[in-house]
Image (cartoon, rainbow, N blue to C red; front, side, top):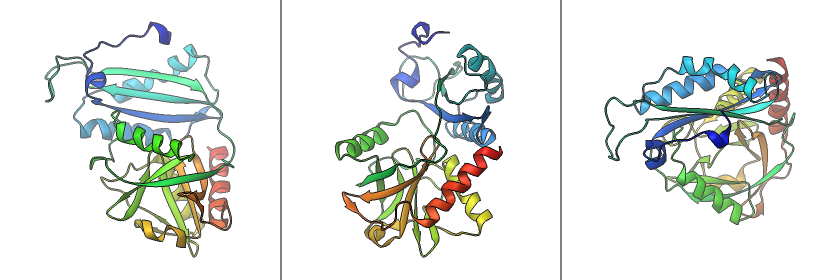
Length: 268
């Protein structure tokens, strides 16, 4: 249906509590990039918060949505959201309610390579400890991204226990002596699909990887840094907290990964 005609009850738990899960994936050259990985993450996140919905059935509705949106075979982004459903307000999970499911798509052509150079700022991570769940309640991330905006930056890098974990809507990587560093998976980061792709590319290209958090105090000693995300793709970082930290932007390892990412997109 048209977006203007779509309605969600005011007592939907997604509206009241942010009690839901979402997923975003990109259609490139007529195919969704790493579709299975995105769908599997949606299933896993729903399992974590005990929302029972048939994601496979939802996935089968994607062609009809794209057709209705005049996006069949065209480059676009697809947003999928599942909330626990509608019930009188109470904190605990209500029994026997139907989940609310919503999808929409919009035209979006991603560049072959993201040639922008990002400025970022850092911030102590004030969020909860289940950042691995792709939840709709994103207030902490929204506040952090607004912090970046007010500081004329693209992203905010979170610091937890002295280590850089992730950004408000991206994963973050550093390079030192041709070794790629990124925070390991766990409850403090979302395991981004593009993050997974970049790690696969590093393995294929013989680029060394250490999945360990980089101390915030050591950022200026790194050779390169970059962000990853579904729409961000692989984006070189040029400044941290207003200071130019990296001599070459993008650095040589970042550029190799950007070109390998482009080659992969074209091959799928």
